[in-house]
Every structure is written in C-alpha cells, then in structure tokens.
Image 1 (cartoon, one colour):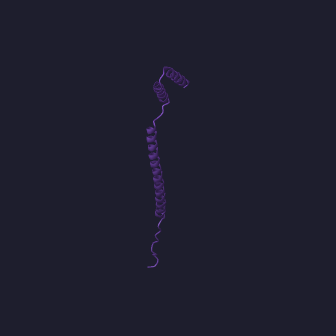
Image 2: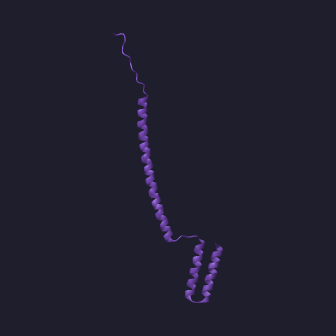
Length: 103
C-alpha cells in the first residue's frame, strides 16, 4: 500500500513539473483510477443493486419465517386433536352380557 502512495506522489510530481493544468488533472485521474482499482471497490450502482437484492431477500425471509410459525401452530393443533382422538379410541369398551339368570 505504501508503494501505491509513493507511485502517486511520483506521478503527481511529474505532472506538476510538465506544465499545463489539464495534464495534471488527467494524470491525477489516472493515478486515482489505478489506486481505486487496486482497492477492489464497487460502483454506487452495483452497491444500490445489491442493497435492493438484500432488501428483497430479507422480506422473503420474514415471510417464510411467518409461514413456518403458522404451519408449526397448525401442526401442534392437529397433533393435540389427533392425540385426543387416539386416546378415546384406545379406551376399551366393556360390553356387559345380558343377565342369563333371568329367564
């Protein structure tokens, strides 16, 4: 990184010595562009696009989380109802035979 600043200083010095302001501006822009390229930066447009993608993903995640909560609640309700029905089905039914002594 220190090398980058040394290069920047050298190119600015060259530009100042050579003359016209336009050359200085062009050289400074070229140096800055090279420096920014080394830093692996993104453009504002790319950043905004990724921010939109993130917002949509968060919204979908929140909707899916809500859906899971609803499905779990429904499953819990069904499990409770099924357990009650199963408990009733497991209760033995005692059938008493008719009294045979009373004939």
